Each structure stands twice: as structure tokens, then as C-alpha cells.
Image (cartoon, rainbow, N blue to C red; front, side, top):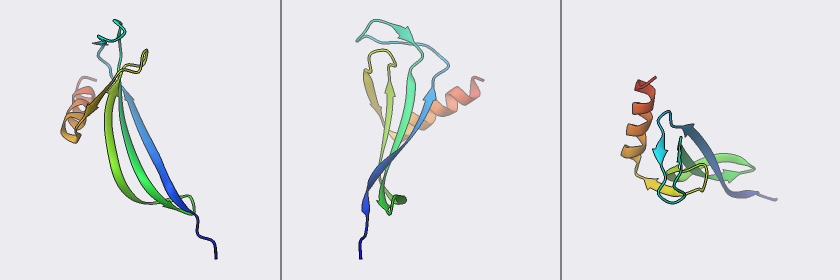
Length: 83
């Protein structure tokens, strides 16, 4: 009997509507909010999440700011309200 198990991420990306200045590359652009959920997989199907990362990064140079869950959700709500 062969059991295929592993780990795989699922990524959600949201482009911010407001522009933000990056002090690393000195550009102003619309940053990306990213939520990455890591799952344990069984036969290539996600079974259980074991870790979630929340990031905001510059699309030009990749400068990344790690966020906590509350900050990420607050930024998502703010972007939805500004529409």
C-alpha cells in the first residue's frame, strides 16, 4: 500500500488600491497583500492547515513586511470600504 503525503501552500493575493512608498527601492506603487495557508496533503488533496503567513510586499523589488492576522484583516476591510 502506498500513501502519498506532503505539504502544499495555497496563496491569496490582493492588490492594494492605495499607493505606498518603498524605502528599499525608492519607488511608489500599489503593494500586494498576500495570505499563504500551508496544508498537510494526502494524495494531493489538502487535509489540514498547519500554518498561515500574512505578508505585504512591494511588487517591484520584493521588499516584504510580515503582518499579523489582525493587521491583514484590517487592511482588507479598509480596501473593501474605499471602493
